[in-house]
Image 1 (spheres, rainbow, N blue to C red):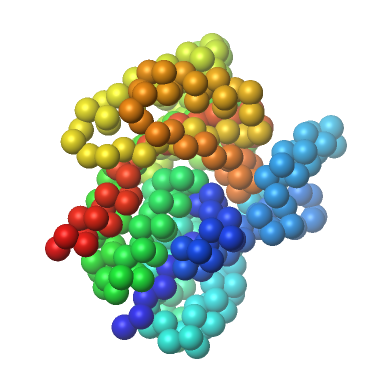
Image 2: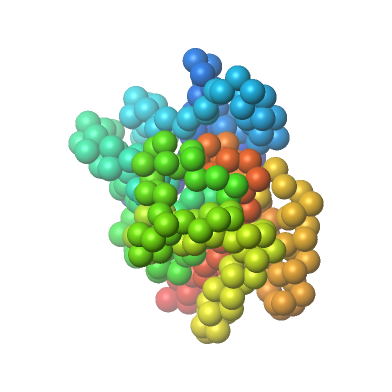
Length: 296
C-alpha cells in the first residue's frame, strides 16, 4: 500500500511547499468574465486583487468553479502509474463548495487506485493543515483509515472567523442568507462570518470597526487556549498589509506565548469574501498530532 494526498490551492498551499510536503496540488480555476485563470499558476494573489478592483468598474464578478472531475481522474491515473494505491483527496468545506460530494459520486469511475474523499469543513489554513498532516502521516506509512482518524481529530478543533466589507458575493451563491444570529436582521457595520463545526458558513453578527472584530475573535481564541493542547493561529487577510500588521501586534500583545502566522486570502476564497476581508483561524497544532502518532 502506498498513499498519496491530493488537494487544491484553496488550501492556501502554493506549489513550492506542496512539492516539499509531498502533496499533490491542483490549481483552483478562477473566472473573470470569459477568461479562466488558475490560482497560484497564472494568477498570483496580488494580481487577483488588482484585477478584482479593475473588474468592479466593469461590473465583472469573479467566480471559482469546481475543479473538473476529468482533471482529478487524470491526476489519479498519473499517481497510480507511480505506484500509488490510495489517494486521500482533501477538499474545501461543503459549506462553500460541492467538490467533495461531486467527487464522492464520481469516485467509482476511477479504477486505477482507491479514492478517499475528505471534507475539511474549512478553507485556507484549516484545510491546508489537514493536507500537511495527512501528507506527513502518509510518508510515515500510515494507512488511509488511520490518517482519516487523525484528520478528524484535527478537524474537530478548527475555527475560522472573518470580517468582510460586504456579503453580496456570498448572497449571490446562496452560501449565507443575509441575516444575523437567530435570523434577525443584520445590524449596520461589517458582517462577521464564521464556519460552524459542520463546515457551513453563517453570519454571526457585525462589527462597526475591524478592531472590534479582532477583539471578538481573540476572545474566542482565548477559550481554545484554555484547553490542554498546542494551538496554531493564523491571521488571514485579503490584500490588507497595514491592518494585518495591526492585528498581529494586537494578538501578540494579548497572547505573547502564542506564535501567530500570517497568510493571504487567495483568489479561490477571495471570490467569496471580497477585498478588504480579514480573518483569524486556529486549531490544534497539526504537528502535535504527528508526535502523538509517532509515540504509538
